[in-house]
Length: 68
Image 1 (tube, helix red, strand yellow):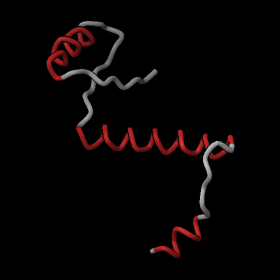
Image 2 (cartoon, helix red, strand yellow):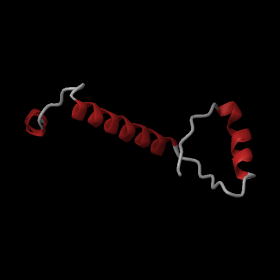
Image 3 (cartoon, helix red, strand yellow):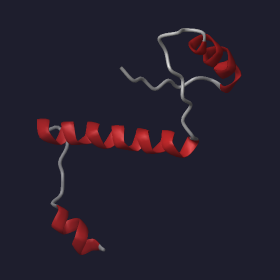
Image 4 (tube, helix red, strand yellow):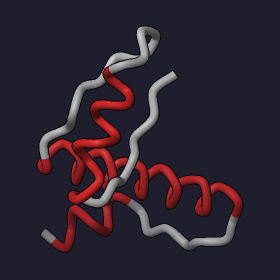
């Protein structure tokens, strides 16, 4: 299982040390750019779920291309 945690900078060293001390946990910090990308993808997936449920209205891809 993979999880992403949002930790205050002041507590990050403690949490990293704690997780690193556990033999069954691999710790790999994300760069700020990758964290932003992961959040944007997560939001896009949530939006897609809402569109499929009918809660959120989507516009056709052709309309988006025509705007460009």
